[in-house]
Image 1 (cartoon, helix red, strand yellow):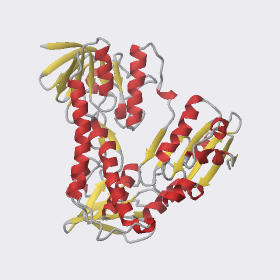
Image 2 (image 1 turned 180 degrees about the horizontal axis):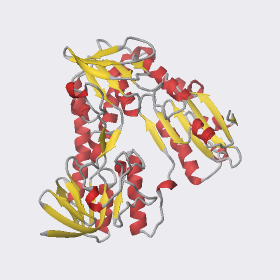
Image 3 (image 1 turned 45 degrees about the vertical axis):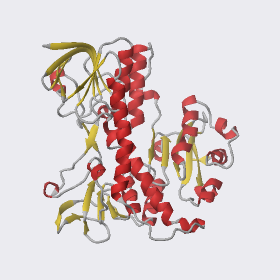
Length: 459
């Protein structure tokens, strides 16, 4: 027997629940389906748990450096990983249970648990049940990529998901991948007390950033004892006693890194391979991401794709914005588009990197006549007061329109300060608006006008 709905939402990641509740509230009989964890990646194995762990790691780091601030801590600083994990689990549980209770308590919304697969452009099968709807919304997310590197099938390895179950301190954590996820775990576990080695195939860390950003981040991590191996052109893995050995082809250093545990942090893949997209005629790109237009419609009328699986953003905030776009266009008579949003994200090492818009390299490649400015964080009073002066702030603006093109803030509270720039960019206002603003002292943001006063032609 087929059950009929007005709308079906597959997946309870960041955009799915909000959309389902909104549709149900608009009078549409709605079903939402989850096969594993309510809340998706962010709530269970992504943003919330990792930032909770980072908070514990920072506490350990600050405690070890208490003497630098005139604070004496008697006795040895130790980290109880069982309690660290328990705290993380409690924070995750609160969010997971909150999403579940919200959905189950929403009138006009049916919550189903099971693996959903498309059987056609209007039909979804969930285990033994068949559902139909005129509108289907795919919010299936992604998972850690496991590369087909030599030896990987013979060794035990961790991903960002399985790291959430670790309640012990690895003696030596080898991280394959020198990008955002890998670097956050690298610093975190170094601060917990592990020896950590990051292995990156490229010539520098986080290659999408400008070279000075990559270099500064490497310096920060190495300053805390994280070992970095670049130009690992051919990575192999093999068992080594009770641990693992990673074979490298690098420009310098030993040709092999041996460790107790291996973490793979080499990117993400969409959860689209077992969704039945081919039965519905939904097109994907060569990497498996669902192809969508500027309003998140797929190649099949009546089917939309939101979140990580559409390849139009890999962040919680972009997924939520996907919901806002679809809801506004379907229910509010809006005409919002993906291309309206400005790229913005953060790297949550300590100090964090806040990013918005273009990099300097992208501005040059686009042929923009641009101005840029850079300021070291050592000039910022808040940073000096806190004894956290690592990093810098830099900004790029269009020389003719005076609009801000992008910014990279690496330093204390940069993940919050970047929003003062993002808001001006969304307003379509010239940089002089923020330059003339009066900010509170002493803060980091108050130095943004000083930074802008030093704009020079981008070379």
